[in-house]
Length: 464
Image (cartoon, rainbow, N blue to C red):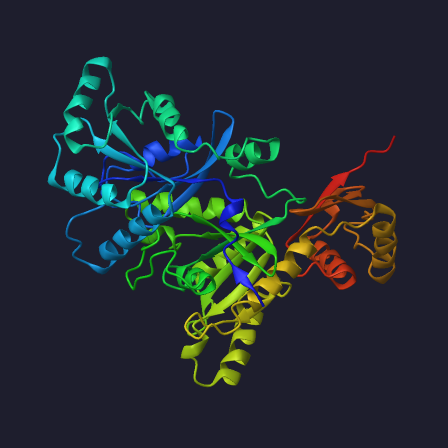
């Protein structure tokens, strides 16, 4: 078995954005990749993990990483881990963009950051941000004091000076790969769109309630602290995209913020986080819904599963923290009963138990991901499907209502990912949902569709 994070030589060069808190790093990141990906908020410390994206500039493709604010004396666990994440990004980067606040005087932290970056002996571009007009742009001259080369006047909020900044950045990246239709699509595509079926990369959203082990799973898979893990709920703020390769197959892991029920959300930032988590479900090929094995299905778990089903996203249920279970045989049976009792409609969803601590069955998860992703691409020919429809009618004909006979005329598969079947009938109102459930079960019995939500749409065909 081999697993790694992919070959660095195959990736576009990396540009790291750094600076103290609230100088506009995330806004600049969004400008550089051409999409609103990173959460932007006045509250300090929103960005915690390394947040990667791709951008296209001057017919070249680059990667960009947004980092948390550098602080002089981190006082708690999360702050210390944030600083570790920043240093990891700086070590990986080919070029560093140091962002400072042009509306404030140079601070002690600005000076300390500049000194630290100089010791790395890497190309640095100094972006003096928040200079929103020509008169304010003169403030950039004050920042020559940092000895970081020519300060560039930028307003990331208004997009002023960003192109000039990127011209300077690209001077240090002569080997950046050229933009092709494929790389441009990857960099600028709609992040809500599902993955292209012909793509080699399988997008995997990792979702669940806070503290169920989502980030711990990612770190255990990568064998490094790629995302911050803490006992504090809400540690992960944004959906983090992570490239990963296992047994020569490519994945995009999307680590998401924990999703609490609406009544428990009190901050704007957490609302943004949940919105990004829901978006991750929509744009993924497979959704890993993580639930604590020690607790069983909670109402919020059922809501998350329900959202994935509504969007037609393939689902795998992952029971975490299996190392904490003493009587595993008894608990396994209890979990089966829990699903049968609380959500019998998800019997098509495969599930497994894992432990991030002992690494039990972690890579078994990827075998299951591959299996479910293949099921999501399954397409049934119209002739074959209608033969099955004939057998279904012979087994159990649609019931009549008030002397009116419900009739199925024919059926076709409209799409994959999401998997949608259209059944043409004489009158939609004559078909009860229980009969549609019966048809769905027959589809599954015949064709599998393991982990795949099936949507059946009825359409009336008017007599000619």
